[in-house]
Length: 173
Image (cartoon, rainbow, N blue to C red):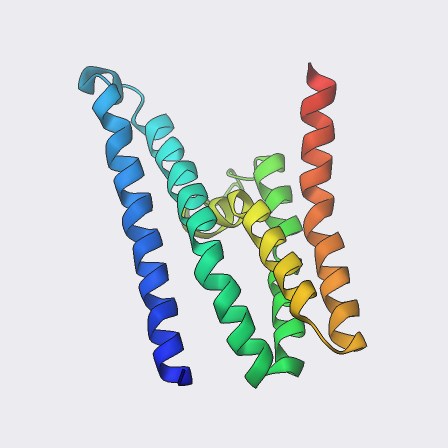
């Protein structure tokens, strides 16, 4: 199959994942009283974000696997550093979320940080397990030792905050 056709099918897979995630968020409100949503709109928005990212991420693993296969065929040396760079973004996002750095003293910085938490930092932190699965897929597909080492480092970097959160949650109970 031609690469363009494969990329078209992969894109269709991502669109299907987006549609399924949107349907899951929409279906969530079938079971909720609308008068409950208004006073807790921020909590519902955070729940919608988490639900969307998880449903999209889990379904998008299928086209991502095929995208990784195409990428590893055409750009085998560039894939591992790109995924390592992606994994390096995880721990700072977890740190910002855990530290609660939403108040900096400057109104402008507070607004910028608040928007970045909503649109970038929060979704990246929530997508940690999905990124971990993508790194594991890429490690299975990697052929050369340099790529395997970089992907193993990326797996460790991505798994560390997730393990720390899991330990914290287990100790809290």
